[in-house]
Image 1: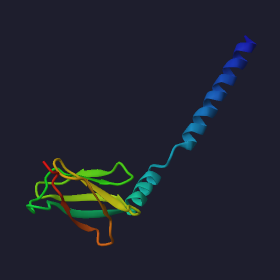
Image 2: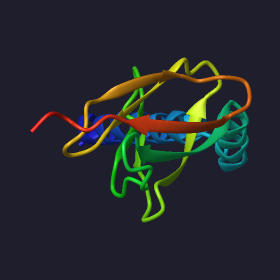
Image 3: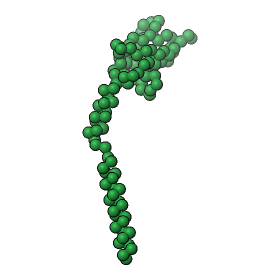
Length: 121
């Protein structure tokens, strides 16, 4: 009987200690918000327009991605796009069905006018 009491007290003291350490290691929710704010401060907003180089018409549903990341967006019905890019982003890649893909350098003005060349038929 004495051995059972000792085993139970060891078990409960271990369980309590584990719970206390786990609880103490939890992140403060306000830290998560601050980290999120820091991450968003390190992003820049890039805007632009993608058109056909021959007809000058907007390219709808074109892919715009940041080279080296998995961040991307699509152009709207007017060929416009908005994308949040990391501050160090160097290139955007543009692609659309029926057009040759293009990479363009991200410049300081943060607004881009892109013309895609149709593929030969």
